[in-house]
Length: 150
Image 1 (cartoon, helix red, strand yellow):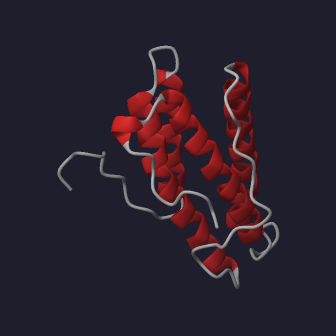
Image 2: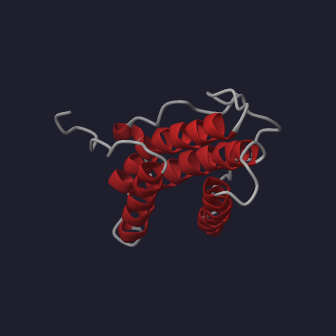
């Protein structure tokens, strides 16, 4: 299990609950990136991109974990393994997994942005925009903002 597959309902979400959900998803994302990187051609453009992004995701996740700890909130722990939504056999399927995971992360990022307090709103917006930009870098379409006509 990769943890929650759907974002916390916006009406019930606090900024802390939203960050906890994002951290849980980032644990799964890190796992998936590692899986994808293992099947990509070494020193290829996608491999280099994935390795750089993996580091970025770890830094973002660790920053959120620190934020939760400072508030005395429970920190989601990574699962021992996850079931990826794409069977990774080669570089192409590895790229598809990364794209799929980044698209799946966007609703969690949007809920955090919607529930963020004034002090964290810019951070949450940056996280959402970065997530959408990374997904576009892997060939995903621009996201439709939740609640807007699609």
